[in-house]
Structures are given as C-alpha cells and as structure tokens.
Image 1 (cartoon, rainbow, N blue to C red):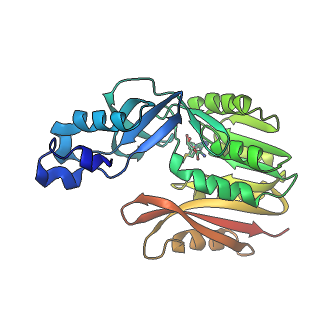
Image 2: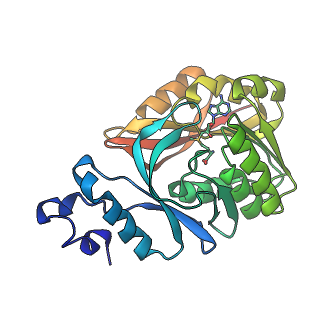
Length: 274
Ligand SMILES: C[S@@+](CC[C@H](N)C(=O)[O-])C[C@H]1O[C@@H](n2cnc3c(N)ncnc32)[C@H](O)[C@@H]1O
C-alpha cells in the first residue's frame, strides 16, 4: 500500500496530498535505512510518516528526514533522525554490494542505472581514472560488470576513502586502487596514463576538465557530469566542453536523473582524439 494511503485518517484530508509519494531505501535484508523528504506542513505528522515507512519495509531499521539540499565539499545532506537505528548499511545493487553510511558520505541508489550504462561502455583492458569517487560504486560496477585492466579511484572525504577500500575487499576486486586526496593535487600526478576518466561531481567537475583531459593517453573518453535546466539540459555542459576542448567530440549525452525542480543531472561522454 502506498505511503499516502497508509496515512489517510492520520494526516488531515487537506494535507494527504503533501505526503511524499516516494522515499529512498539503501541497504539489504541485513538492514536498511530509509531517507525521506517531508514538507514543513507535515511537521506534526513526521513520526507517523516514519513509522508508516518502517512498516512498509521490514528491513528498515532507521528512518532519516532530509533537510535542505546537499552541501559542502563532501556533498552531504543534513538529516533529522526520525527512527533511530544503524545508518551503516550494505546496499545491494546489480550483483555487487556497497557498504555506506549516508550520514557520512555521498551515495545515491538513484544513480544505479547510470552505473550500469557506464560499465557497459568499457572496452576490455581499459585503464580507468575515477575522480570524485565517494564509496566508489561506479568502480565496483565497472570491475564486476566489465573487464578493465585497472581503476584508480580518488576521493577527498576520509569516510569515502574508508568505505571505498572496504568495498573493493567486500567485492573481491583486486584491480582497483583507492586514493585519499584532492583531485586538484592527485590528477596532475597521473598525466597520460588512462583510456577513460569519470568525473562524478555534477556541481563543479567542469573546473577539473582540463586536468581530466591531461590524464588521457592517446585518444580517450571523459564522462563529464554537470547540471542542466529542463528546457535545454545539455546546453551548459556542451558549451563548457567545446570551450575547453575544441578538438573533442561529444559521442553521447544522457539525462542521468532529476536533481532539483527544473534541473537535471546530465552526463556527456567526450572523446578527445590523440
Ligand atoms: C556527487 S559525489 C559522487 C560520489 C560517487 N562517485 C558516487 O557516485 O556515489 C562527489 C564526491 O566527490 C568528493 N569530492 C569533492 N571535491 C573533491 C576533490 N576536490 N577531490 C576529491 N574528491 C572530491 C566528495 O566528497 C563526494 O564524495
């Protein structure tokens, strides 16, 4: 039964429409955390909403309310705890596991289709540089679903680095290297070493695009994430890419998902020739 239906008779009829129609679940049978956005009008009913969510999924041990937008270098939400419980979970995706605590490091289960798509682009034996890696879910997807030679993953948040190392062990990945550091300092040490670079930081990756191009050896692809307005989601990203690399070709473009009202997270696949 949908959340709205469950709250009929609890929330006044005029407010039922405001009850969120969806929420995010991270985890597995071993335990899950639910993350929900509750509008201010429903403040008096937030605990009933949390209990209804927990009743809908018996694996949910903690319910968190998202407050505001992601912020800071680590791209984290502020959360209000509505049902207290463990927030470190083992999230199961396409045959692999991701250990993560969403209160400490970025993770979104809504990016999983994009992970599959990126993994499907890899050729055998590719060398991949994964910038802004968080707990490294794209690296795990690529290592489990494709056949890269090596993946180097770089993350600033110490919690991201810790979980990244654990995720490589958990999934028995031996051809991935975890690096704890700032992309601005690490990428210049990795010039001309890769066939493919992923830049999963939609709010700001453009500042590092020249560094990413420098990390390619010969011809190669950069997966560049950016934000775009609904009317023309790829315009800004394409303008940036063309300005920074006039010789490059945009070989694919995808709307990854909605990001905020009227704003999409987009991905451009940019081929830089030799
Ligand atoms: C949008 S998240 C993506 C994380 C991961 N790729 C994923 O999809 O779950 C961006 C990540 O970049 C990290 N980050 C931000 N600035 C950074 C920098 N200058 N160097 C390295 N990592 C950075 C943040 O801590 C955050 O974990």
